[in-house]
Amino acid sequence: MPTFALVDCNNFYASCERVFEPRLVGRPIVVLSNNDGCVVARSKEAKLLGIAMGVPLFHVREIIKKHGVVVRSSNYALYGDMSERVMNILSAAAPGHEIYSIDEIFLDIERLPVPDLGEWCRQLRQRVQQWTGIPVSIGVGQTKTLSKVANKLAKATSDDDGVFIFTPEVAENCLHETEVGDVWGIGRRWSKMLNSRDIIT
Image (cartoon, helix red, strand yellow):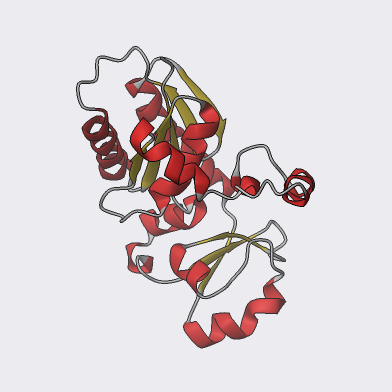
């Protein structure tokens, strides 16, 4: 039976900034686009303040000033180097893998001799954190789409775990609570069409 693990770096650009400035841990951070015009990345703390992805900087200046949000210009050389370090660790863990983006990789773990999948994921997550300083979340499912959904659920768990594995026991309830628009590959137009036909989750 196919089994995929999607490993996704948490708030990647902000996490990279924290690796080299540990004093930023726990503080809200936003990273700006090339021309410093828009927010392209946010730490968890910045998200909780209501700062949206892609919002122009001038729209959130008051929030930034009021809450002491740290603002950084994009440093793509740094992010690329950190991504390579993370991907080297993860790809070594599973010979079958597909780097999907600068901060995401699919691992084909179907044939790996793993007696305890949950423990294997937690150890892998800990290894990446220890060796690079970058926190990751891991979602496991029988398809890449399910592993994407599982990864989103993993991000909703505590930072001490950050792993979610789809099993037959949890799949139905989890999918019932997943909005159809949150499924990988379904954009706004498809979501709107499906919702109009009473397909909500």
